[in-house]
Image 1 (spheres, rainbow, N blue to C red):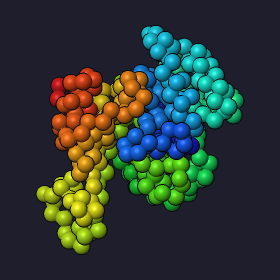
Image 2 (image 1 turned 120 degrees about the vertical axis):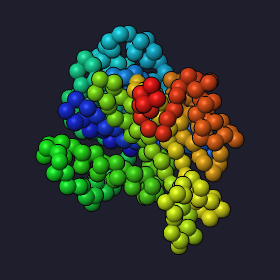
Image 3 (image 1 turned 45 degrees about the vertical axis):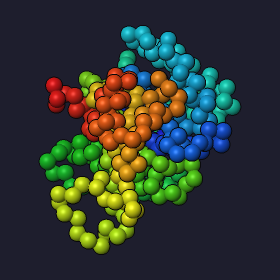
Length: 296
């Protein structure tokens, strides 16, 4: 069932999800037990789903005509997803975040569309309860350099990120796991994915000091260490992410609008993986958002 959590801050958004597949008809081994559940369709439109994967994937694939226009007709988009929700026996729910014509957050569940939301979630009810518990246990930071309103927003986002990461990594709920994916908005650019670097040193490494010059990725898999990079497009509005596994020396591209299943490339380091994805799909992946602007 998974968990998707979205919140609106003024005209901007944060959307968090896991990537684990628990649909009994969809579960495969290896990296294919992951799926991108929050899909950026264009710079001003993003959709998240929870529940049965087939109806959700079909609903997104069939939106080409709806999202190809210069300005999206939100009534048509919402009606299309509502029909997919009903056709799935209300077992596939959606969250829709839109920046045009107005910034708006929608939820499609229980046979209806809710709009003008400030916050919402879909997915596993027990997992959401645990997320809420973790959220309230997480402390924020003093931000004297910021206005009280901005400090509250920054701390809310930090607490959301830490609570959701803790939930995904805890293994407390069978339906939620693998990786946390985060979508944000950049004023004037639109929706984009946040990059992440996940490193675990392995138990023996904890008994020695890690020198500053050492990279997490150099910790050996033989002692239980691993490192994974979530790579993101260098521009907003591209609905794709890459996940590179350092020790396994392979990467997977998740690009739902191009292919339903992840595209796996073996025997590549991170740089080789990035180069091959650009050559094959024209998507330039980076270790941080908007890296192309720095290079330009």
